Image (tube, rainbow, N blue to C red):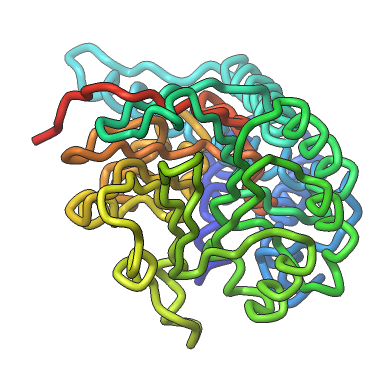
Length: 377
């Protein structure tokens, strides 16, 4: 069913864009076959590795598949819009407007161009984004404290060790007090990704590098990956917290397992366990891969929640659908009660849909400031 659903845009493009063109039958048949092959990218991924989440093709082929798949999806959306206009024209008094052949060629060219731009934006090492968060009870020693949020690295054949090494170099150059990684570090088994994740060993911050699992960690040898992350010198906050100190003043950094954890037979998402024993009165920064449980975190007194998972919605328009699946949260800062929720667009994204048009990737430097912030209802 999964692969059939992804094949539907292809069938629509063949029927409504390709077939009406004045081209030889043999040429149209060949193009239709190529489109069908591209539309089944996720099937070929599953056959290559046993999982749609970890295509093990050469990087150039993964880029090509994403470009072709993206062009199909964008072209299908454009053709739907044209068909709606054409139908409205026919229903209107004196109507009868037909889509010119030239428009079909133009929309195909535009879809291919936009898809190329979307893939390029998806796979680049992201630019820096600065965010300031005001916390009411922030101790003076932590006023101006900086942390770097990385999330959804999805290290894979598409985002390999060279890409990871550049991310690490740019991250370290920022000199932040703390680095956090809010899940989905990998796509693939430990044997397949060992070299790609190795550059993370070199991440440096004065208060350490801390991470939580995302939902993709549970697709691939969860226990082995958690052990390996710790071996890289990364602190794993799976339903627990650590206390950051400046003299007598404290800031709590807590992390939870993913909301999907229990479905994989692993320790369930447990905010109470993560906060148990935390210093009373110390502000809490929570790492939670998915943003949709933010209201509960706010009710527990969390000052700042950092999440990822949504990839910012990836494409303008699609972000509205992604928001509906994530409690209304998709990108940027939200006031949730007395808490700030920051949903990061992602450092990278899933190689099965590596397209960005609008919500760009980001290296996110967050500066904490003391002060009074407005409260949401």
